[in-house]
Image (cartoon, rainbow, N blue to C red):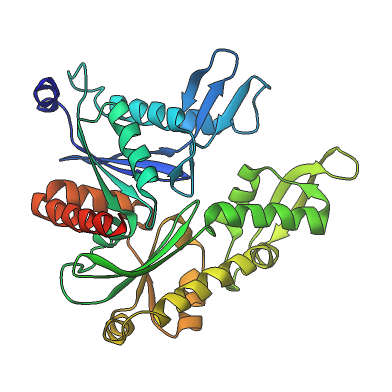
Length: 351
């Protein structure tokens, strides 16, 4: 009863709880938070000293007693307490401008496909502990499709590929349900590690993860471009142990990440191969939609199209598709009820 009373003064939220970034949608206002899913902890006091953008600035620059962690791996909670504190921080941040002393919002959270009931419970418990009065979990692929404005409530096949930080999800959607899907742990973080490994093997230089990500974003590409992009990267010389900087070009970065990109394209092809032929015909006509931060890699849509022989499109503002989808679900009670009913049926079958 008390939670319901407080809920009247709280803002309902849609949350994309991602490995790399957490985005928050507020009912009636839109996306208000887009910050890294990173937490800095003081091991001496067991207290969290920074969350989000502030914590990211500390990455690789802390003394031994301060540890910077990502509480989610592959979209799944790996550190319950840190996730709870992070959610609590974002919920309070949303309500700072109002007069709510004790926020109790209704929350819709996107979760990866195929996670276990235990992992789902961990997300629910962390959100409840962070202050939510009601928690609804929806498949990220479904939320992404809604955010990309695909027609998911009709008997029409849609193929969406969500390239996140920790995982890539490939899903065929029809009639508000997932028909076939694949989840693989090859995504943005894996591309960063590929660049780090390449720099070690080719140049004897050890890069930090932040520098590798910067190289991927600035000059990374899936296919050769007309402009031969270059940038300077800095790290530690593995031979002398001293600082070192070198100039790398887009061809070298592409060589570093191409193996992982081929894995993603082959998994998309494999997903199509197990999809019913009627839906494949729809997908051929409508094309494949890419979303997530990885969709912004130059030329990735053309590379995938060359392999699967189907048009590939990048969603508008691909990074925010999932959180915009949770916002749509949050504002449409009948859609929320339908999706929750589908989830309950799936869980009953699993049991």
